[in-house]
Length: 360
Image (cartoon, rainbow, N blue to C red):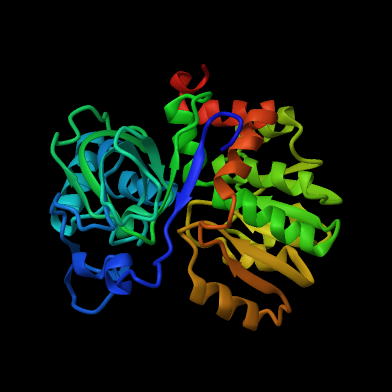
């Protein structure tokens, strides 16, 4: 348990548990033989198997890359964005943006837990799922009528299914739901950043997209883990002013993360660790140029092209280690929530993005 009452639960298939069921293979409708994340369509039947859990959905949180793509594709028309999200969920049985390949996560209340579920959840538990909506069977029943289409956070009614190999966290009782959901959506970023920084021993760190949700958490985590110098890169004067006022970074610089030369010039002397938290494509080469030989680049954005990153590093003769932030590090939820509780500047940046409902 954390101080605020959040408990993380995760499932691993026990020796007596069928692996195919534990990973949700039985929920895949097409194509046969793939895991739920790679499936085109999932079975959302509310009847659960003994090792599954059914959640009554309260709110979805679309990942930033997916929401940005949807808004751009529909010219910012909120009704069109809402209709597109409904279409994706209806056709696929999950929220899996076919363009970005990403989804998000959700908050809801446990309605039924199978007797063989290893997640430790009970009916009535209010939880955030810490597994992607791209692999979570999901049915929406309210037409997203309560969503204005103008935010990543989506009020919704329906149900979702968790498998034995899923992860969920009981919501903390000391944070507003919109804030907790926003934090848990990106909680893998600070945990992995802290691990990388601690392993290298007082490295210099640059965070691209540093004023965003994952970015500000990564900054705070890097400093707490012992970074010798922390640089935050942002795209606009407004974000530069906001991040400078927060004092989360030793230096704040401004550049378009899609412009490799501009990024390298803004960062200056290459850093030991570069963390990419930008929700637009095309930021791979700038991150590589900003990183010193023998350094590490951590990609958290779902907009990242990993072929572009690998081939770009090869073409630049860059001797850097590149890591994919897969969203899970043991203790990641607790790490992120602790940063929000103990770093007022981090909480302020989150509140600015999630609205007044998260300020209480």
